[in-house]
Length: 329
Image (cartoon, rainbow, N blue to C red; front, side, top):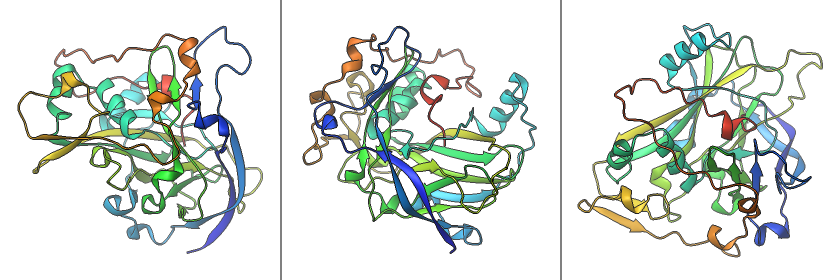
């Protein structure tokens, strides 16, 4: 594979994060300077990213948590409500994807369950998140109108990512409190991109998997980031892209291990074969509930919302710009 060295931003390794959980607030007025976030990033040069062009078939979602496919869209997306609904009917949920130069994963082990619950009714949460189903969030990313030259996406082979690389900041708005992963640098990480992607091609990657709810299991989420392609011309059109996030629920045949931090007690039925797993904190890192969370003094903790069970389950217009407005690819 051809490769190039790029510059990307990793979360800074601050002593502050040993005592205070990283966080970022959005849509919160009247904050003093510096109160909206304690996130700091460091730029690392020389990160090698390999071009998957010509090797697309080598990447499997079940192995790398990443796949490249040809998937032409029949919808002409022009930003209107009508085209958005049409695209969602084709691919479930559409979110315009801004460029982000800090390496991240959209959900944590706990945050992924929280995000899925936000899109389900109470009865659906009870049914699908009580241990009988494997729950995943799968992203589909594509160029929108033209070939991507500016700010292409790079993806990390999930097998090369370790638990020690991950830091879980809070991302909070008045509507929702989410949790994502930012990533620490490691020489073991393997990065890939697909050069000159066109709108007929998509990158498919996993951003949450309930099968990884225990730290005894290797995490298989795909870290991703946009970067400046050194081979591109200076004056190219800004990238336009769409990112789709699918909630994928698969029936499990065997007894399922459920992380006790991922389900509320009310979600767990009295009967059923469920074994509770206790997650041990990483060495040298305090559990979340022992870290300071200064944002709780600035904003009321948003309550978990449920979808009204009104019988309309084919399309739910929940384009989550509250959490993802500054978190794309």
